[in-house]
Amino acid sequence: GLVARLAAEAGVAVAAVGVGAAGVIDHESGTIRAASALFADWAGFPLGPELAQRVGVPVRVENDVNAFLLGEAAAAGPSVPDVLGVMLGTGVGGALVIGGELHHGPHGAAGEIGHTPGYSDLVCTCGQTGHLETLASGTSIARRFEERTGRPVNDAREVAEAARAGDADARAVFDAAGRALALACASAATLLDLPIAIVGG
Ligand SMILES: [Zn+2]
Image (cartoon, rainbow, N blue to C red; front, side):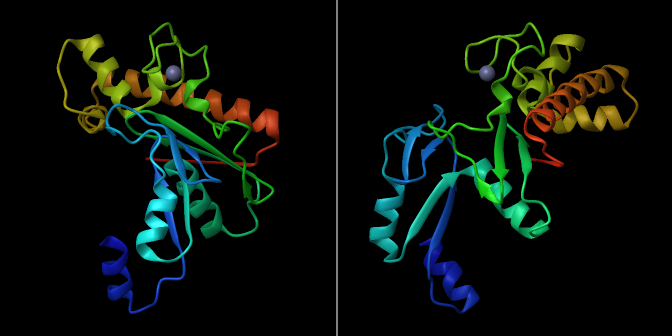
Protein backbone atom coordinates (compact mmCIF):
# COMPACT_ATOMS: atom_id res chain seq x y z
CA GLY A 1 0.00 0.00 0.00
CA LEU A 2 2.81 2.40 0.84
CA VAL A 3 4.65 1.70 -2.43
CA ALA A 4 1.46 2.32 -4.44
CA ARG A 5 0.73 5.55 -2.58
CA LEU A 6 4.27 6.94 -2.98
CA ALA A 7 4.30 6.06 -6.69
CA ALA A 8 0.94 7.80 -7.19
CA GLU A 9 2.12 10.89 -5.30
CA ALA A 10 5.30 11.06 -7.38
CA GLY A 11 3.43 10.32 -10.62
CA VAL A 12 5.91 7.63 -11.68
CA ALA A 13 5.97 3.90 -12.35
CA VAL A 14 7.97 1.97 -9.77
CA ALA A 15 11.13 0.43 -11.22
CA ALA A 16 12.48 -1.12 -8.02
CA VAL A 17 11.99 -0.99 -4.27
CA GLY A 18 14.63 -0.59 -1.57
CA VAL A 19 13.89 -1.42 2.06
CA GLY A 20 15.87 -0.48 5.16
CA ALA A 21 14.86 -2.96 7.87
CA ALA A 22 15.95 -3.34 11.49
CA GLY A 23 17.90 -6.43 12.48
CA VAL A 24 20.51 -8.63 10.83
CA ILE A 25 19.58 -8.95 7.16
CA ASP A 26 20.65 -11.51 4.57
CA HIS A 27 20.86 -8.93 1.78
CA GLU A 28 21.33 -11.58 -0.93
CA SER A 29 18.07 -13.40 -0.20
CA GLY A 30 16.22 -10.45 1.37
CA THR A 31 15.49 -12.46 4.51
CA ILE A 32 15.56 -11.17 8.10
CA ARG A 33 18.14 -13.30 9.94
CA ALA A 34 17.67 -11.86 13.44
CA ALA A 35 15.62 -9.07 14.96
CA SER A 36 14.97 -7.66 18.41
CA ALA A 37 11.89 -8.60 20.44
CA LEU A 38 10.27 -5.33 19.28
CA PHE A 39 9.67 -7.06 15.93
CA ALA A 40 7.62 -10.16 16.76
CA ASP A 41 7.94 -13.06 14.25
CA TRP A 42 10.26 -10.93 12.08
CA ALA A 43 13.28 -13.28 12.28
CA GLY A 44 13.24 -15.72 9.38
CA PHE A 45 10.71 -13.70 7.37
CA PRO A 46 11.56 -13.55 3.62
CA LEU A 47 10.75 -9.84 3.34
CA GLY A 48 12.36 -9.29 -0.09
CA PRO A 49 10.64 -12.18 -1.94
CA GLU A 50 7.26 -11.51 -0.26
CA LEU A 51 7.38 -7.84 -1.18
CA ALA A 52 8.63 -8.51 -4.74
CA GLN A 53 5.66 -10.79 -5.31
CA ARG A 54 3.25 -8.07 -4.22
CA VAL A 55 4.79 -5.06 -6.02
CA GLY A 56 5.98 -6.92 -9.14
CA VAL A 57 9.40 -5.23 -9.35
CA PRO A 58 12.86 -6.10 -7.97
CA VAL A 59 13.23 -5.53 -4.22
CA ARG A 60 16.47 -5.08 -2.28
CA VAL A 61 16.48 -5.35 1.51
CA GLU A 62 19.27 -3.92 3.63
CA ASN A 63 19.80 -3.35 7.32
CA ASP A 64 18.36 0.08 8.15
CA VAL A 65 21.73 1.54 9.21
CA ASN A 66 23.33 0.22 6.00
CA ALA A 67 20.54 1.90 4.03
CA PHE A 68 21.04 5.13 5.99
CA LEU A 69 24.77 5.18 5.25
CA LEU A 70 24.30 4.24 1.59
CA GLY A 71 21.92 7.18 1.19
CA GLU A 72 24.22 9.62 2.99
CA ALA A 73 27.29 8.45 1.05
CA ALA A 74 25.41 8.72 -2.26
CA ALA A 75 24.21 12.23 -1.39
CA ALA A 76 27.79 13.26 -0.52
CA GLY A 77 28.96 12.03 -3.94
CA PRO A 78 31.87 9.92 -5.17
CA SER A 79 34.33 11.98 -3.14
CA VAL A 80 33.54 9.83 -0.06
CA PRO A 81 34.01 6.21 -1.16
CA ASP A 82 35.21 5.12 2.30
CA VAL A 83 33.05 6.06 5.27
CA LEU A 84 31.83 4.81 8.65
CA GLY A 85 28.18 5.32 9.60
CA VAL A 86 26.94 5.30 13.21
CA MET A 87 23.27 5.55 14.19
CA LEU A 88 22.40 6.45 17.77
CA GLY A 89 18.88 5.41 18.73
CA THR A 90 17.42 2.58 20.78
CA GLY A 91 20.86 1.02 20.30
CA VAL A 92 24.03 2.00 18.45
CA GLY A 93 24.03 0.73 14.85
CA GLY A 94 27.03 0.84 12.55
CA ALA A 95 27.77 0.43 8.85
CA LEU A 96 30.74 0.60 6.50
CA VAL A 97 31.03 1.76 2.91
CA ILE A 98 34.41 0.81 1.42
CA GLY A 99 35.36 1.61 -2.15
CA GLY A 100 31.88 3.01 -2.70
CA GLU A 101 30.15 -0.28 -1.75
CA LEU A 102 28.52 -1.50 1.44
CA HIS A 103 30.78 -3.93 3.26
CA HIS A 104 28.63 -6.73 4.72
CA GLY A 105 31.17 -9.28 6.02
CA PRO A 106 30.55 -13.05 6.07
CA HIS A 107 27.59 -12.80 8.51
CA GLY A 108 26.12 -9.48 7.41
CA ALA A 109 27.35 -7.86 10.62
CA ALA A 110 30.31 -5.75 9.43
CA GLY A 111 30.51 -2.28 10.95
CA GLU A 112 28.52 -3.11 14.11
CA ILE A 113 30.76 -0.91 16.19
CA GLY A 114 28.07 -0.43 18.89
CA HIS A 115 28.94 -3.87 20.25
CA THR A 116 32.69 -3.42 20.65
CA PRO A 117 33.92 -3.58 24.27
CA GLY A 118 36.04 -1.48 26.61
CA TYR A 119 33.90 1.62 27.09
CA SER A 120 32.32 0.93 30.49
CA ASP A 121 31.63 -1.77 33.09
CA LEU A 122 27.90 -1.80 32.26
CA VAL A 123 25.86 -4.68 30.82
CA CYS A 124 24.79 -4.12 27.21
CA THR A 125 21.38 -4.92 25.66
CA CYS A 126 23.12 -7.88 23.96
CA GLY A 127 24.09 -9.37 27.34
CA GLN A 128 27.81 -8.67 27.10
CA THR A 129 29.66 -6.01 29.07
CA GLY A 130 31.16 -2.61 28.36
CA HIS A 131 30.00 -2.04 24.81
CA LEU A 132 29.87 1.40 23.16
CA GLU A 133 26.07 1.08 23.19
CA THR A 134 26.02 1.18 27.03
CA LEU A 135 27.05 4.86 26.89
CA ALA A 136 26.15 6.26 23.49
CA SER A 137 22.65 5.04 22.54
CA GLY A 138 19.65 7.28 23.18
CA THR A 139 18.34 4.66 25.59
CA SER A 140 21.66 4.57 27.47
CA ILE A 141 21.90 8.36 27.71
CA ALA A 142 18.51 8.44 29.46
CA ARG A 143 19.40 5.48 31.72
CA ARG A 144 22.84 6.82 32.72
CA PHE A 145 21.26 10.14 33.64
CA GLU A 146 18.64 8.41 35.80
CA GLU A 147 21.30 6.32 37.58
CA ARG A 148 23.42 9.38 38.22
CA THR A 149 20.66 11.68 39.49
CA GLY A 150 17.75 9.46 40.59
CA ARG A 151 15.56 11.68 38.40
CA PRO A 152 13.41 9.69 35.92
CA VAL A 153 13.32 10.92 32.29
CA ASN A 154 11.34 9.72 29.28
CA ASP A 155 14.19 9.82 26.76
CA ALA A 156 17.55 11.29 25.73
CA ARG A 157 15.78 14.38 24.41
CA GLU A 158 14.98 15.43 27.97
CA VAL A 159 18.61 14.90 28.98
CA ALA A 160 19.68 17.01 25.99
CA GLU A 161 17.35 19.82 27.04
CA ALA A 162 18.78 19.68 30.57
CA ALA A 163 22.34 19.74 29.20
CA ARG A 164 21.55 22.78 27.06
CA ALA A 165 20.10 24.47 30.13
CA GLY A 166 23.42 23.91 31.93
CA ASP A 167 22.61 20.84 34.09
CA ALA A 168 26.02 19.45 35.13
CA ASP A 169 24.83 15.82 35.36
CA ALA A 170 23.23 15.93 31.92
CA ARG A 171 26.42 17.43 30.50
CA ALA A 172 28.54 14.72 32.14
CA VAL A 173 26.35 11.99 30.58
CA PHE A 174 26.74 13.57 27.14
CA ASP A 175 30.49 14.03 27.69
CA ALA A 176 30.82 10.28 28.38
CA ALA A 177 28.68 9.39 25.34
CA GLY A 178 30.62 11.74 23.07
CA ARG A 179 34.00 10.57 24.29
CA ALA A 180 33.06 6.90 23.73
CA LEU A 181 31.66 7.65 20.26
CA ALA A 182 34.80 9.59 19.30
CA LEU A 183 37.06 6.73 20.48
CA ALA A 184 35.05 4.28 18.38
CA CYS A 185 35.24 6.50 15.29
CA ALA A 186 38.99 7.05 15.79
CA SER A 187 39.60 3.29 16.13
CA ALA A 188 37.66 2.55 12.94
CA ALA A 189 39.39 5.38 11.09
CA THR A 190 42.80 4.12 12.13
CA LEU A 191 42.07 0.49 11.25
CA LEU A 192 40.55 1.15 7.81
CA ASP A 193 41.94 4.58 6.83
CA LEU A 194 38.46 6.09 6.83
CA PRO A 195 38.48 9.86 6.24
CA ILE A 196 34.85 10.37 7.29
CA ALA A 197 32.35 9.19 9.91
CA ILE A 198 28.67 10.09 9.54
CA VAL A 199 26.67 10.12 12.78
CA GLY A 200 22.88 10.10 12.66
CA GLY A 201 19.83 8.92 14.52
ZN1 LIG B 1 26.36 -5.12 23.09
